[in-house]
Image 1 (cartoon, rainbow, N blue to C red):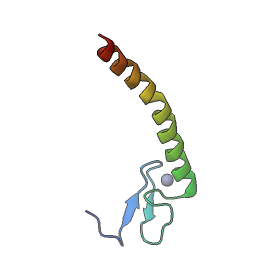
Image 2: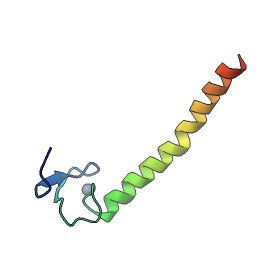
Image 3: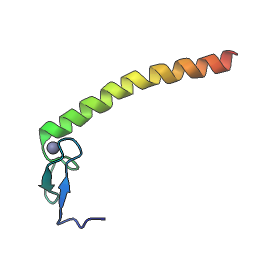
Length: 61
Ligand SMILES: [Zn+2]
């Protein structure tokens, strides 16, 4: 693993940013953190609906 002093790549925009003292880790900025949160929320709302439907089907059958 990288040492904490090294730079990390932001998983959202791919830019390298200093890891240490970064309040938005593991993202480079507030914007990227918000983008990830948005992606996470939209996936979270989308996927359980599908999963539940499949699970209920199996239980009923
Ligand atoms: Zn970024």
